[in-house]
Length: 390
Ligand code: NAP
Ligand code: G4F
Image 1 (cartoon, helix red, strand yellow):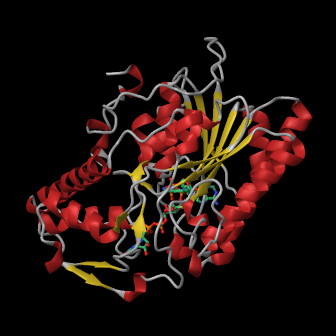
Image 2: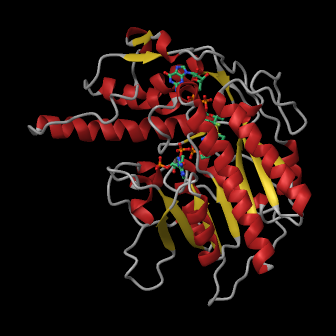
């Protein structure tokens, strides 16, 4: 097994994908051309906004395994929000701690500026976002502030840092296939954007801020236009994880019903571990560019449900009801990406299949439900997290 995937055993069983299909995969040979500094005294440094999210945690693991010093910003919250990082975090008092977390927020430009000047990263990954499409219809202004203006804040900090220090760090902007919205599939880098939600409009604005800064100031900035990617660490209100989590609980008699919205929407679903590799590859090229990252395969929500339920051994037709509250005022019906450019230039391709990903998610959530059931049977109280979010 490649050394970079030998991770310490997770302290908790929250995300048991570490044992499964994902991390046993050999890493794809890098198509990148940039030479990463190898000096033992100066490891390359990465700065990640959104490090506590699904992608942030996979990217942090990936970069740590490559020898990077990784800095991430976390938001102050009244409950802990670092669950996805606990297994790679070590006490900063220990010598040579490679993962360092700082308080920061995309709403707060001055603190971002201080951090970038202090850390002096070689690579900046802007993954922070209010990333839920349905929620963006209820919180449009906030979504724009973090997703669009937040990206601009970090880009401006980046630009000032380059100008003031003469350094040449590189910047990755997390774009989304949602920007294509109503444009016909298959979608590639030349497909026009037709955003269908405040989230997608904000991502499109961030995309163009990034392109403009690249062209106006000759900066190394890449936009990744990533199609949906999932994993056992996916947030529990996105449809895939909502399904696998509920199937686990239904299988173990902890829940009766699962309420969903539009089952006909089609998405190009890949695995997050494959997609963070593409982010890194973009920043290793000779020149900055924008890339679509996708599997090229599209499935409906119903197809996802069929496969996940068959892996879990649950008859979903007897427990799934449709609740119109999960419909969107404007829906994105059909996403299917064409990532030929990334294949040719980055040498990137998805290595984890749809079936493998669904199986890993279902197995992880069956294990979580089994743990809950065990606690219940031992007389402990089990309160499912997140019921209020749906
Ligand atoms: P996620 O799990 O929802 O994580 C979002 C991250 O952003 C979390 O770390 C969150 O912190 C952080 N964040 C939220 N508001 C912030 C703020 N004001 N300042 C700083 N950080 C903030 O999302 P993901 O799936 O990992 O996606 C990563 C990025 O890729 C996002 O920009 C998303 O929009 C984009 N994207 C995702 C997909 C996909 O299918 N997953 C596809 C295309 C693009 P807390 O933990 O404190 O909430
Ligand atoms: O899982 P979803 O909420 O993801 P969505 O809207 O495609 O957005 C995700 O992928 C984007 C990339 O294309 C990212 F940029 C974004 O940050 C996020 O990660 O919904 C997928 C589909 C939608 O068509 C939705 O209408 O599933 C449908 N759906 C049906 N029932 C549901 C539900 N979605 C959710 N969240 N909850 C439901 O009950």
